[in-house]
Length: 477
Image (tube, rainbow, N blue to C red):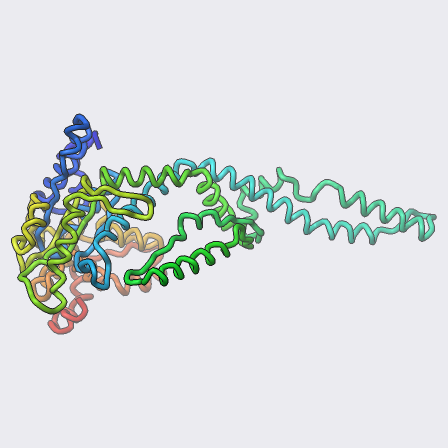
């Protein structure tokens, strides 16, 4: 983070998002202020709060993508939630505190994956040793009965009687039983490295230790103390009945993956993961709250909207800074960055309760996308839709090429449909492109080894039936 100036953050966002410079600038400054805060003296650092941002603009113009890309850029825990999914306290539905629960879970997954990556090489070595042990034991134990059976079928020495032959057979069988194994460890290692055993079935033993932090009790609201006690007793009985070990018969390739994951989990201290995850949430967490305009508006006495203001009031302490109790311990929300967003067509930011308005002091407006913006989205951004489709069809051996006039035609169609129907921004490009490439994707195997050029004429031909019929266009696009 200390190596990223606001200009560099905006430059990185420009690789994925077209336009919206005001929103990018505001987010870049908010993130840089986090680094600046860390350089302050402790007594001053506590009082420097994040400046939350409210993004105002239509759907599909990049609000969510800006927040998500920024969180990835600084390796911060990030979640996106919709304000309409919550109800005020006392109503049936999700409580706003679940935002912090989900953020902590996202942070734990993030930190845990990073720790697993750090111990991956060591875990693979340990898993390999365990797998060789299982193979050595099982493959040689399967051959031992065959060796003993063949020894019993061997004839006695010439000139010897039946009794003498039987004694020799027994001795040979006994010596054969303790002979050098058919599959020595060095041979198994060599076969394993050359992937010669990938399809061989092997029995492995896996532990259920991970149930200790994956199994937890979730008590629904509204239960009486007696019902809570009964729920806890049922949970405890089920938890105690979990077996500590389980045997699985899988292929060697799958066994290697399962054993590597288990060994990696053993090498990672989950308590340290939780501590680091909570610290990351408190110091660098990012929460994107979409559809905030849906909970703003005039007060009503009855109806579904009666809880809109209640949701705002429940959000207030979390955004303002409070302590939320999670199953991993208390989490302070004082320095979490909250980014609100909404179209605000039928309402305006001033319709939010004054206290919540004050917690989003930075307001940025995002503009609708033009034809030129659509063309840049398709051709200039990293991992654009064009590049994604080219990569997908390349797996089938198809070399897909888009001409400039084809990209312009796709952008023009998306823009026209947005103007004629509901404006869903850049998401319309996905619908149009999927329609254009539908037949080609379906018959891709027949075009293996060929170069297919998509030009404006091809785009118009694929879209003509839809575009000439407005009702069909509304339905399909």
